[in-house]
Length: 112
Length: 109
Image (cartoon, each protein chain N blue to C red):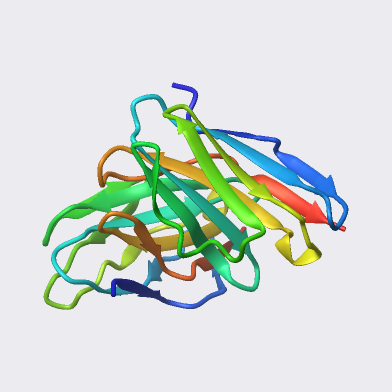
């Protein structure tokens, strides 16, 4: 099994640009999670999908952030416009019905 | 709401030392409990889990027992190696994971 796949692994962009992060969950998993990790705030849950439907987006920091899951095998997290304080490692994870989550390798985002 | 409190680091040990990382939780009901490990530059990996009271999870020499009476899930390893240097996260699961803040462990040769 390939595990959770995230792309790109590294992204460097300038303030004001749009950034799109991509995630392919493990086949057969019906829950998908987006996290952000920073030194200051640790690991934060941004949004959680179940069966492609957003269930809890209370962690999404502001309207600049949006996430979609158009089908069971793909999700995106978009930041528009990006700001330097968005610099972090963004993780995607998937699970099947309340079981353990499997994490992707993360996308390291740097906004200059 | 559900929450996890784990021992703050950083923790620095010599090889073959005994490691304990304390974790306590607050939850309604009986959630599953997990320890995740994050090696430098990588994502989180499940280390071990326990799904009900008195269950003991174990993996790679690490152990943790789900103690309902003390609402704890402490991680232990009897003899650490340099390769155990990582950040360790305690977590509980209802429909989503609630993570502790993470404990950085450094093992010196």
